[in-house]
Length: 253
Image: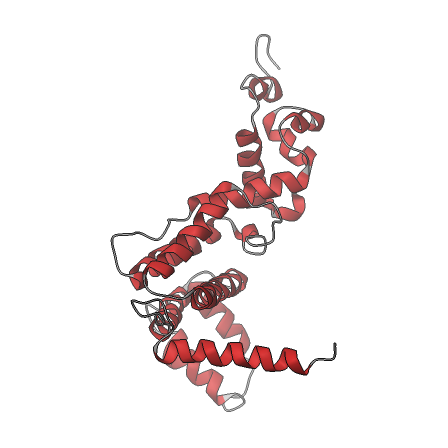
């Protein structure tokens, strides 16, 4: 190293450490290498410090993960208040999908933390608030939130796990599967590939809109102006609650 040149470690150490810097650096490490590679040493190295220095700002790896998850929630748009509930849920869920695609390690951690941060709590409260304001009862708001997020997380996991990321790669994968196979071996899969998936402009990500629309169209506010359950959605909730009560009553004490 030439005289007067600064080592990367010393240059990085010039910027004071903070909890936010540690968390952001940890997210960069996880984005590049996955959460399994996230160690105190792996986070300390790009910061130009020793691993023990991090403990002045975080309690350990679990605390870092808590902060990382909260930072991802902070990237998700809250449901807007100036639109109808379906549009609000759509915008929030699309924003969440985009955040999870930016941080693939996050999808399995989002609701796993026993010490959720302020952005996480703010996000959950806003989603529930939007549903409650639209006339969803407390139980139905919980059902809707769970259903939407189950679809969101499941779709992102499948989307990120696909062995292709575009039409060219999809064509290569399909060719490898079908080239050595009799044309009539799996007729329905062949039909799906040739008449749908391999058509110009196909994007698996477009399936997200279809599923989310189906879910949102199936959900309905179940409270009247007086705050009581009303209509098919309310009846479904009552039936589910009755079944739960019957099941519980039949269990041995």
